[in-house]
Length: 330
Image (cartoon, rainbow, N blue to C red; front, top):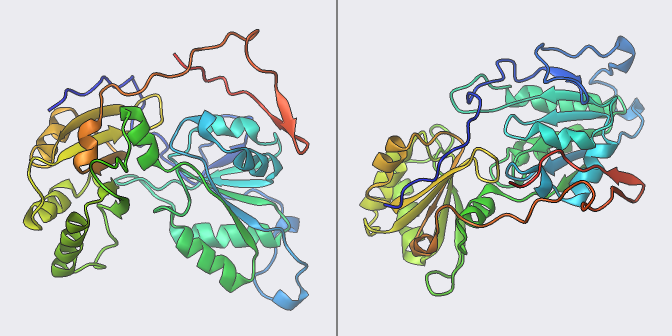
């Protein structure tokens, strides 16, 4: 097993006890619940035929953690937003692009931590849009990869609220980049599969799950396992029962794309012990397959740091100013 690289000091995993708190983008991370908007902003959920057209709700991917991995389209959406509903895994530094008057509501979902009910998030999106607000639903990674976008799209369609989608860099790609290897290395595999290690309760019978693991093993793809830490013993044993070689390499990256990342390379047989020994915490990405054997800890080298005099000037695209984050590569 390749030793893990050190994790920078970080705050506790559940450092926001009130995930639905709200405040202005320029203030501190909020601590109180509720929507303090005046009654004049409230719009009843009845009377669709009488309601004027509302702006589209934008489902925006914020990438894996590094604020500099935001797309330009995501920056434009954030800069135009009146209301931003932000996931707990999104780095608050991305809010440098939000207008000072934008309303920020944290709607975090973390395993083992207080979570905002999905139904509440959907109602809030619809209500704000119907009130005329330009709403951004800001998610870690890509909204279409285990980001609950399916439920939110269905709710918006049912309510007759228009929506748009802005893709983000998903954490599987960031994890592979951290360790400097290709998920689709042609000498080892011919594809990659995004799977969850934490399926919806009661959604998969054990026999069907085993068949699924076996099919993926036989297909010869790299497995990118999201949300796999809590049930690591279950899905790891499922792969072994399905016939995976116990010596198959696994690359594990905690908080890929962020300053507190921790990475290690091991085998499927030793995975559970290695994760426990090194204190890996959520969120963690597991990349399983021969391609992961090409991984290198501590990973890639960041671009050189620039002094303020060397840095490119702040620019504007389509009238939106792109503000430089305070983050700099070490």
